[in-house]
Amino acid sequence: MPSLSPPSSPPLPQPSAQPLPTPGISPWPTALAGLLCLATAMGIGRFAFTPLLPMMLADGLVDLRGGSLLATANYLGYWLGALACALQPWLWRRLGWQGPVVPTRAIRFGLVATLLLTAGMALPWPAAWPWWRFLAGLASALVFVYTSGWCLARLTALGAPALAGVIYIGPGLGISVSGLAASAMVAHSWRAAQGWLAMAALAVVLMALAWPRLQGSVGVTGGAAQADDPPRRGALAAFALAYGLAGYGYIVTATFLPVIARQALPGSVWLDLFWPLFGLGVSLGALLTLRLPMAWDRRHLLASCYALQALGVALSVLLPTLAGFAFGSLLLGLPFTAITLFALQEARRLRPHGASAFIGLLTASYGLGQIAGPLVVAAVLARSATPHDGFTVSLLSAIAALLTGLLIYLLLARRAAPERSALGRP
Image (cartoon, rainbow, N blue to C red; front, side, top):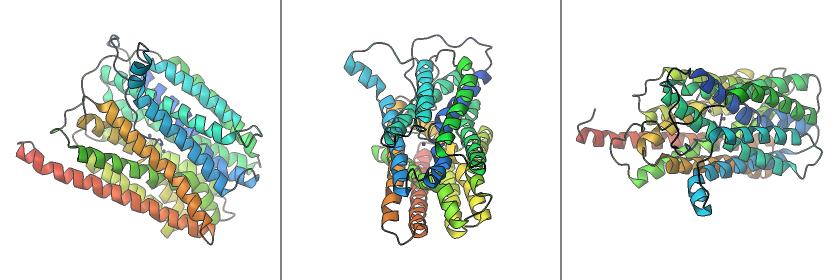
């Protein structure tokens, strides 16, 4: 749902010997809790930085290189946090600790940390800002991983797995609300520090709505759909590579969209609306996943999502106008959390009995792509004659990454087709 992220695919918590939820309980409180938690952790904890970066640049608090490093610190924290969650069962065994992690406790801890670290960015301690962004990435990963796992397991147990798409409306909602709030702040000449405090206040509101809904255990549910045949290691590695390319493909635009738009359309009154429009696309894309049949091949759906994002990025290069940025933002956002959801579903299909380990690999691959994006932008900007030239080269590399991932998914699906036919499957 940008890592929505979208954000990267979460490993599912290990099933515990807890009873299944009582039949007759409505699944909607669980779905809404997930939506609100991801709106806080992703929309604010991770991506509030994007609309606030121009304010920090205007206040002289950072330059473009410094902004890239702050973004990278956050993505590095998210990657390490997600990887730690994936390795949690192994770490518990190594340390001799007993009992599984209680998902709702982990979620609440991550939400509180997100709030405090967001507010910490308002403090005049620039040396601490990279650490705050790094820790905010860790907290975001913790919330995303355990919210996704807890919500998906409970919705399945309650007989409403199709409501999973509701959860991933959260990142888009948080992005839209935080983006519109930043636009209003710019219009009233707020300082960046005031902006960070306002985002922290918004996090308090979202947390207050989510907190009472974070109740209920994760029951032992049925297994995921079986793969057509045991996948080869090469196919799993190719799938992980393709997913990682999405992390790089979207992050350049998702991090620097307001800055790029300001350079292309100086003085435009619409500049601060492109990022909220991206968030709107994220939410709409999550809603659309509710209508897609589960029988459709997730690799084909992922390839389609990559094509939409590549087109969205291309519009920023080929049509640096009001319409180009508007449609580009929408197309970049529409498949954002859908990519996460489809990849998670495909991972569970490919490895129904070892999904957590494989999803951990996907998480690491996607996270590396996100980390590489801002670093590449910083390096290219340092070697470019103008910022416009640097951003153009960076966006073209993002398009190339997405198109490469698209081709990998199509090849994987094509290779699987003869194998299914040989086994007598449609």
